[in-house]
Amino acid sequence: MKRHAPATARNSGPLAEVLELELPQQGLVLEIASGSGEHAVFMSRRFPDLQWQPSDVESEALASVDAWAREAGLQNLRPAVPLDAGKPAWPVDRADAVVCVNMVHISPWAATEGLFEGAGRILGSGSPLVLYGPFVEADGELAASNREFDLSLRTRDPDWGLRDVSDLDILGTVHGFLRTARHEMPANNLTLVYRQR
Image 1 (cartoon, rainbow, N blue to C red):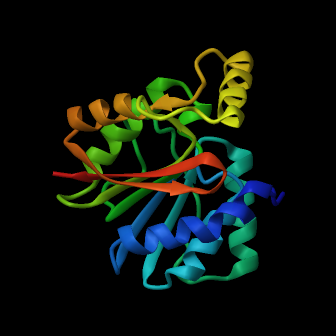
Image 2 (image 1 turned 90 degrees about the vertical axis):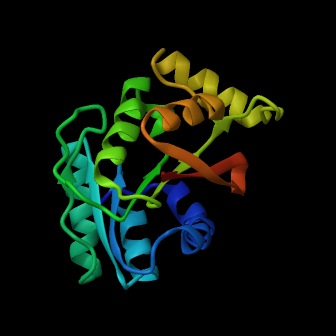
């Protein structure tokens, strides 16, 4: 029932260092597309004063998240909830931060549009929407590994693929967000932070 994502072990520490700079001291963090649940456990341990709400669209992922959570026994880690970022109805109506790791490139663009729209509804002024993953930047050369990854994603599903940061910036503006930070991460990934105006 528990899933294991090898990349999670590699990126949890660096991501937590960035989140320490960007997340509020207290409050509720909604994690979109929690996947295996390993990030949820790691971050709940790292940030004990934050309530961590995992979510995913897949029932198998939800089961994995809850299996990891049961084993960890953390009081600030809530049971996972079903959430499709591309649908207007979210089971959470207020949060102090939204974190989304490695979803934007392995889902249709409509899911990213829904992510910004939904985050815009539940976040207050100044609250962060944090995106982690591989992205394309107009003024930067795409690493060979990311170029190959993008091709493999589009071969699997033409609606998938690495997204251009400038397109995300435009989408953010439409939904009341301004990008306030860009953090370079290991393995040619980025963490992008958007805050509600």
